[in-house]
Image (cartoon, rainbow, N blue to C red; front, side, top):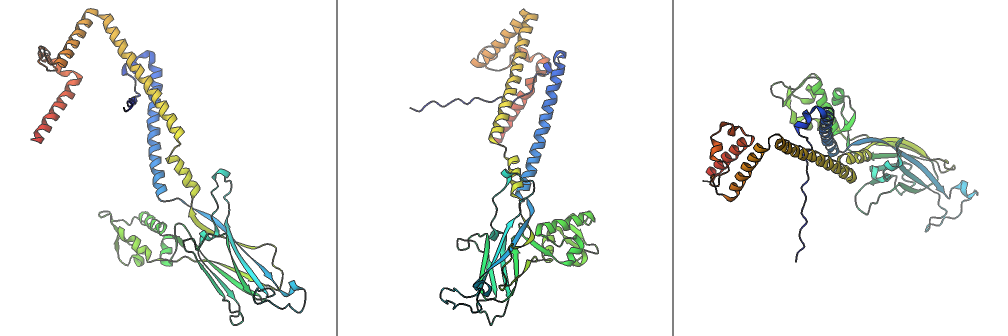
Length: 411
């Protein structure tokens, strides 16, 4: 046998109090304070809902920030003449590589921590290889003397065959001084583009994302009032925009296509390093700081907390609202009880007569018998004009008319 289902208790949501109490001089001050609090709550709820929608819209665009990426270059050497301490170098082992002069170049990088950042707000550090889309290392040395290649290229590719790394190591044989050029193509978010000079003269931005360039161009159009006053889809070209548009007017939806023609790949970060195996390596690595645009995870998490409040806060607010509604309902019940008893005290005979008539009318309605013949209105009541001014008559007429129209439509 199935267990009986638990009866769900309907929650009371009405927090208003009777107008009679609001207008009572004895409760004027308290009623005014309560009404002010209710009005303040409505305004606060509206502002919070509006801000929540703004945050949700911002989250859909993924907030970005500019961070500093510090890149370290260092090297180590092995089997060099100054390390062996003899004029005649030992016989090299071609199988193991022991005794062959060689050097190793290390390329490492990490994001600098933000100032005044709390420990609980710190996100896990990203690996260096996740911040680089492509890297090219060029070695300036005689290719005829060294046959192991003077260009090393690392393209990032997803998958387990290309795991994330904190850095890269390039090992080569040799004992001569080598000039090295490291070319880094950073993985910006959103993707950055170089703006061609023609468009730079208009918006004053040399490098930005595609959306950022379109937004800057639109801001220029609004500032110069170049939108057609009749057809708002048309954009008029001034002296600066005429060579870019190639026409006196263009449609707004064509702006992204026009902007794309003036975007190119961004300039890579180029690092120069000199490696001299004939002397001991420096104690500290060389460092370069480059800026990289990336997703602001800290701000995104904060906005996520605003949009999705904690379960505990939601439960506390619901509990307080329910308590206020129960107290307001208690005031309503007390007011009804007081009105009932006061009417009885003022004129007991008329009160009892009116109450008996009301009960008799309700009983006839339920049983469908009596003078009203199952109707909800007594015939003698219809003869009095004040009857049609009662509050429920207008609603009853609207319901009756709605039922009539619905039945006619079904036919």
